[in-house]
Length: 229
Image 1 (cartoon, rainbow, N blue to C red):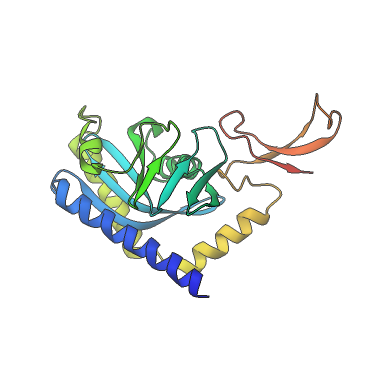
Image 2: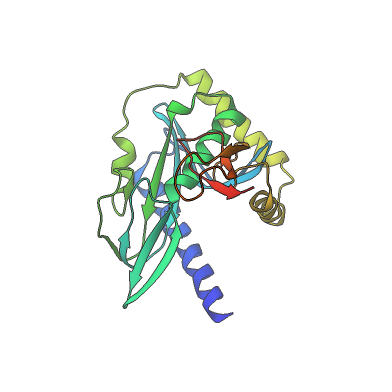
């Protein structure tokens, strides 16, 4: 119980740090900020830590408060945190934001190409493997400001902001609802728990499992989730 409380507290601290950095480094008149937004989809819900709407695109910021050494790559399903000689596994956050972008683009009826995802590590950590440029541990505002091409007209930006504000004001989704949705999605045999796409039956063509059927994500190779049929 004590360990769980510590983890929750660190996560809360990380979220507050990110909120403060965004407030400090970005003009609120240019970058409209939304925090802890739960977006519905046909296959459940997704929770976005921080969402920015600007003329330069939408920005999803996923916060990770971790210490020690971080090992991983863009294609790995599981990353590793090494701390005081112990190794801890956690899900590749890029896969999480992949699903968030997909759901957000459908919800707002916008092109996914104008949504940018940033993984922001706020703890005292060091990357020990080469990670994508969207995975950072400092200068969050500076990274976001690198995107300076205006891709969203003012009227479209107003529509997006209005849709988000209305959704937040009217939404009856609670944290409990979201948790229930997550549990249902991970138990489902028809919905990919990683990206939210459909699972389809496939047959292994090679290897020790050749000829055996399995469930695979229809979004392959973008998502490589599999499950025994």
